[in-house]
Image (tube, rainbow, N blue to C red; front, side, top):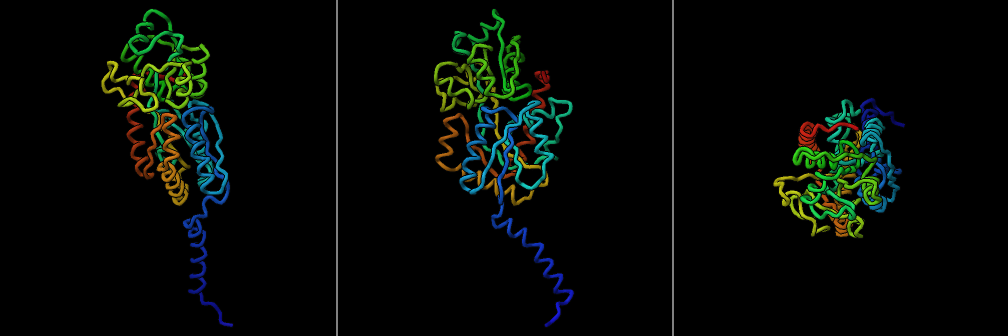
Amino acid sequence: MKSVSSAGRLRFAFLALLLPLHAFAQGAYPSHPVRIVVPFAPGGIADVASRLVAAKLGEAWGQAVIVENRGGAGGNLGTVAVARSAPDGYTVLATTTAIAVNPSLYSNAGYDLEKDLAPVIEVASSPNLIVVNSALGVSNLKELFAKAKTTKLSYSSPGSGTTPHLTAEHLFRVQEGLDIVHVPYAGAGPAVSAVAAGQVDIVSTSLPPAVPMIKSGRLRAVGVTSRARVVTLPDVPTVAEQGFPGFEDYTWVGMFMPAGAPPEAVNRMNSEIEKLLATADMKERLAALGFDPVGGPPAQFAAYLKKELAKWAQMVKETGAKVD
């Protein structure tokens, strides 16, 4: 039997090291269940979008994709938990624009967005809505503002520092000088339900949690923060067309992995979600909820995040928003 030379042994060792990477690149990921952490209560924009995506990914991969709600501290608790988890591609964060707001809102959010997390994809975006209980008797912003000047009103939001909170603060306080009491909730679902139950007068929220109750007549939308009216609620005027030109805010949903996650895992999840967003079924499901699919490569999302960090830092400064 011929002996193997030292050079041959080195070649075999090198090839052995490459095998796991080759297997990963050939689609071995995911080889076991993937966990998507939503750092908010059920019913919010991140929860709704991630559950749509998780169901489709599970079908495509033949693997369980589990959504876990882990709310608290405006999304910080769940975000930090993912940032500190093993960077193996099996723990994913599905969060909202709050992840770009919190670094300027909190003295210590617990994470550095640009160092601790790897952007995977921007899934979808939704403008914010100003919505009232139908019993309030107002049908547009002008009527709402007039009522706020004679009646002590309150508004709910998905939580302090969320984009709906900052949208309302900027509109009510900075633009109109109104003193409307903010009542933060642990997620958009509870914030919308509180207005439907008559516990709060107004809610500032993204579209998905509010659309069903608006269509049922329990709630009335009086303004949307998109550039143009949305297809889902074509009768609702934009904030801009009601006397606030250029007023435009969106809440988006994005996926992240812990920094250091294998590029193969990041790219595989990105490409799979990109495919899903291009399907007619997913477009219809998102549109029915008030979402616009976004997509794009991880680098595109990373560049957008830099702009969002700067934008919301300025908004926090202008509104004087604080963590209640």
